[in-house]
Length: 285
Ligand code: PAF
Image (cartoon, rainbow, N blue to C red):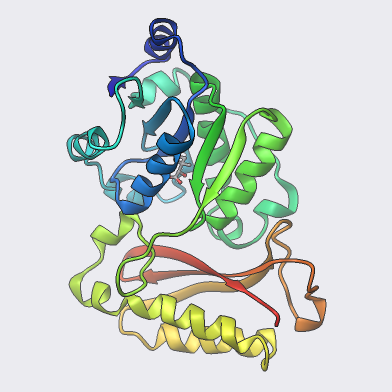
C-alpha cells in the first residue's frame, strides 16, 4: 500500500500503476472494525482500493468536537497495511491541501437536510458535501463505500452523487456492532467507562422500539425511547425519529406508512460529552 498526501501524488500513482478509478472508502481515521469492513468490501470488489484519512474541519459544527476528535494516524496506517494490497493507497492530505482557500460553496439538499442531524448540527452536511466532492474530484473513484450508521449522510451522499457524480456508485454497508450491540464509532473510545458499560442499552432500546410498531403509535414509541435512554445515568436523548428511507420524511403516524416503502428508526443522544447516533429498520408486518 502507498501513502499519498497530495492530489498530484494521486495522479502520479494512477499513471505508474496503470490502474485508476478505485473503490474508495472515505474516513476521518481512528479506524475500527466498521471501517475495516468497508475496506474489505472495496478490496474484494475493486481491482484498486483507496482509503482517505482526513478529519474535515468544515463538517464540525462544534469546535470542541473537532479538537477532541481522535487522531491516530500511525495506528490507522498499520491497520490498513494489513488489509490493502500493493497498488492500493491511503490518501492522508493536510487541511491546506484540501482547502488551499476557504470553501464557500453552499449545497442545498432540500428536505433531506432539514431533519435529524441536519436540524441538530447546522452546517454539518454542507461540510460533508464539500469534503466528499473534493475527495471525489481527486480520487475519481468508480465506487464509494459508506457505513449505514451515518444513515442521513448516506442519503445526502447518494443525492450528491446523483446530481454531480452519476458515474460513481455509492454503496451502503451494514453497521458493525460491538458484542453488546453498540454501533462501532470512532467516538466510542471517548466514552467514560460507566457510559460504555451502559451503551449496549441503545441498541436494545432500538430493537424494542422497532418491535413496538405493530401495536403502538409513533408518539408512544418516541416516549418509550426517550424515557428508556434518559433513565441511564449521564445519557440524554437528542432525538428519535422514524423516517422513510429515501426521502427521510418523518413518520408522524403509522397510517402514513406504506408496505412498499422502507422505514428506519434513527436515534441521536449524548452519553456524557460524547454524541452517538444509531439506527434500525422498522418493519410493518
Ligand atoms: O463518515 C465520515 O467519517 C465522514 O463524514 C466522511 C464521509 C469521511 C467525510 O468527512
